[in-house]
Structure formats: structure tokens, C-alpha cells
Length: 321
Image (tube, rainbow, N blue to C red; front, side, top):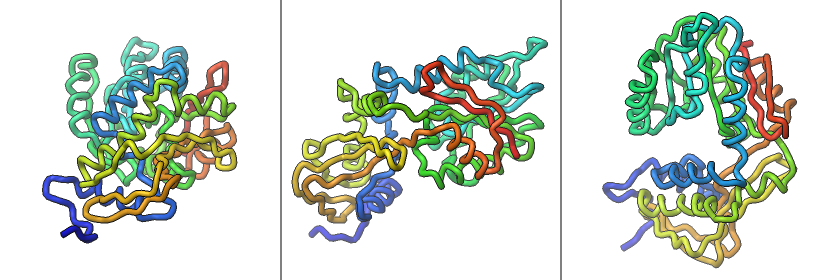
């Protein structure tokens, strides 16, 4: 008969179940955003980045394309590019394609770091064709944990594009940047992307699009738990909700139960009340001052900063303090 032992049936993923149960047995209920990115979650997120409401990717891409070498510190050559959370080289290529004043590639080494080992294998194959002059050294690891990087030479640039820094709570963001500073070592540089604060009328549609792709992305998290954590969520009994939390300066994504219900996860019984939320993601939005303070607390100094004409998205060049 069913019990609440918490055991995971053979063939399911204990790590997924443990992460889910840690959040679902807390109050208020949460689920870690890292569980979004199974194969279907990655497909849906890629679709989100193409939506008209989702300004982030196209704004950052335009900045990377237009700024080019001005993003890099003077004298950088024969350098290593270390991308944190890089399972796809799309944005890194804007940097890997750059050449110095002598026409030589600025970067000769690329270290993408991500938990998705299969994606890293495919990335390495693509890079061997598109950038044979670059030594690609994928590192399958959680970039939030302490890392031992391969020998990288004197010039090292960390790269954290997108708005992933905003998915971390403020303390975790400082912790990540401090750990990255330690991993990269003295005299390193860091290129950081961050979404900037703006009117909720612009922010909210990016997380609640008219086509419902973001809602599908959010609900897919429950589908993954059904498959990998022995859960029995009925996706029809949950709705997607995105809100702007002005006090915390963040967008929040939630899954809202439409009725009182009981679900099973890895043999555990979870009671969920009508209108109760499962908090699935935060996306903090930054001001220039908050970015400087966050970097400083982690041992970095902001050397330069750029934004688009509408001040939607920012890129900052940090130096090891």
C-alpha cells in the first residue's frame, strides 16, 4: 500500500525528487527553477526568446553585436572565455569571433560550464567545425558550486549572459560572483548581463505572453515531476501566474492550484489548497547601483557598463578587485 517513505521507484531520478520534495514540503511551497530545463523545457524557453513580448534576448544580442571589441578590456589576447551556464555557444560566438588589432583571434580557449553534459558534447562538436582555432573544453558541472577550472593562461574572461543573475536571490548572486572570482583567479575579468528595472507594463508581458508559451513552460515543470519523480500532478488543476513584486524588485512566477487537492511525489503525500501557490521562479531586475553593490560585495569592480537606448538591458565589465 502507499506510504510516505520518500523512496523513489527504480528508473526515476532521485535528485529531481529530492529537489522537488524539499520545496513542496516547505511553507510557502516552491520548486527550484533548475527543474525547468528538461528537453521540452529547453524547447519552450527557446520559443519564449522569440516572442514579441520577450525583449531580453533580442536586446542583449543587439548589444553584443553592436559593441563588439569595446566590450573587452584593453590588451586582451590569447585569452580564455569561461561561460557560466553555457550549454549553447550562440551568445559566446559574438566574443569568440572577435579579433585583435593584428587580426588574431582574441580568444583561443572556450570553457562552457553547464550541468547538461549531452548538450556540451554537441556544443564541442559544433565548435570543432565553426571555430577550429579555439580549444573548447566543456565542463559538466553546476556553476553554483566551487569549480576547479583547467589551466587557462594569463588572460581570462568570465561570461554570464542573459538574465540568469536575476534568477538568484541577492545573497546567492553575491555568492556566485564571489565563487566565479575565486575560480577565475587574480587579474581576471567578467562580463555580466542583467535585466534592468522598468515599468511593469513592459516587464509582465515578457513572463505572461499572449500565446501562452510561458504558461506551458511553467506547467511543464509539473510534467517533468510526473515523469522523473513519480508524481501524479494533474496539470489541468493548475494555472500560471506572473506578478511584479515591487518591494523585492522582482518578477515572480507561480503555479496556482484551482482547487483543494492531494498529489503524490516519490511516495510522499502533498496537500495543496485551493488558490495555494507553488513559487517556481524569481527574476530580479537591477539598477546600476544594485549591480555595482552586488559586484563589489563579491570582490569585483565595475569598470564599464553599457545599456540599450531604452535602458532595458545592461552589460557590465567587471575586474577582479
